[in-house]
Amino acid sequence: MTQTPKEKIVFLNEVLGAKYPNPKSELQYDSPFQLLVSTIMAAQATDRQVNIITRELFKIAPDAESLSRLELDTVIGFVRSINYFNTKAKNILEVSRILVARYNGRVPETREELESLPGVGRKTANVVLSNAFGLAVMPVDTHVHRVSNRIGLVHTNKPEQTETELMKIIPEAWVINFHHYLLLHGRYTCKAKKPECSRCEVSSVCDYTQKN
Image (cartoon, rainbow, N blue to C red):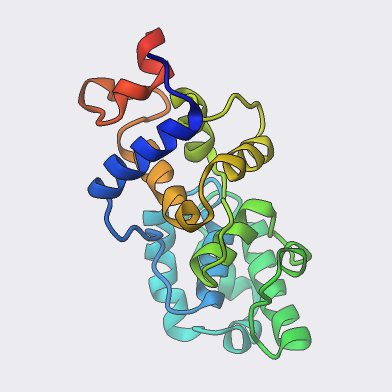
């Protein structure tokens, strides 16, 4: 019998919740500011690459005030190994200066304020709101978008649509962890080019597996 998206949500929460107890971001950070900087860097880059960079960057500039005092060339020197390093360096430096000037160095806690910062789109804002401030929002990256559609939780073309549809069917208390379940499942099992369906714990409810 075909399961509804809400029934699949219950199944996934149980199975992936057992596989990934107490899930959290794989980015390494000690504050909302460090998470914000790391997430800006992580676009088109792996968490592993970002963690290597921030491990050194945050030694000399762990907060907005200290980072805002760096020269652009210094920031570029740290981030040169990732894609779009020039743009990311400029955005990180400008974000730090704005936070110091407008928010006393603190990261704002609303999506609107976050999205007003250079280099911060909806997904990045949601990552910060969810992981740093514990708000029930759904960051949708390529993994979450892909997995949600393959399994059949949603049938959408754009990440923004995926976010909207997921928020309709996931119980609010589950949202934060469920984001990590989908992301981690996409990163390590339901991969973009070669999904590992033969060892997938949730293949029994997956539309992609049944069609292929």
